[in-house]
Image (tube, rainbow, N blue to C red):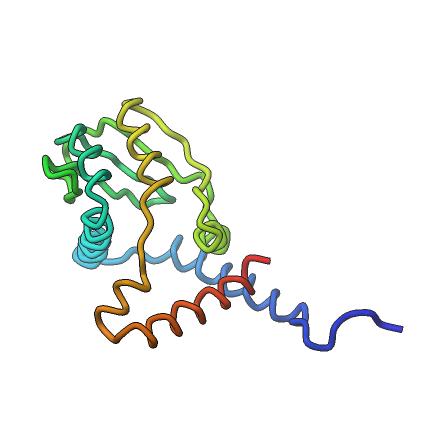
Amino acid sequence: MSTSSPFSFPSPFQAGIKGLSEVADRLIDSAQAPVWLQHEVQHRLVLLINHVLMQEPIACARLATQANKIVVLHWRHFDWRLQVTPAGLFNLADPTASSQLALTIQTTSVADIFQVLLKAEKPNLQIEGDVQLAAEMSWLADHVQWDVTHDLARIMGDAPAQFITSALQNLRGRFTR
């Protein structure tokens, strides 16, 4: 007699996710996005990070102490160079400028990165460079969180924002078990 629930996801569901991850990994390894597209994606991510930072004045004040320093984030064959501004925000750095801190994400699988992000954990990093800047970056990762519900509520109202956030949290719960 079987004791498994008839409502649990069958193993082909998980195999399907693994298959999608493998396809994504192969695409990332084989395809090189145009430079202009990489720049635009990086620029939009900087805007999002700055939006979140501006909601935390303490974070901006702490980051401002590291003004003009450059952090480079490596993942696979991608590099993302950020310069700390005097306002305690980030800007895209000159690709030829030397960095004071290098963060290399050790996890290479797209699925593994996705799982880490869903669980709101830090990815496995190799850290090289300025210790104080690394400490500030760690503090930011530990203490600054995006209040998605608040931002959605400004656009569509409280009730729809709560509904969407709740649905996303339920979906997240299914993938992080």
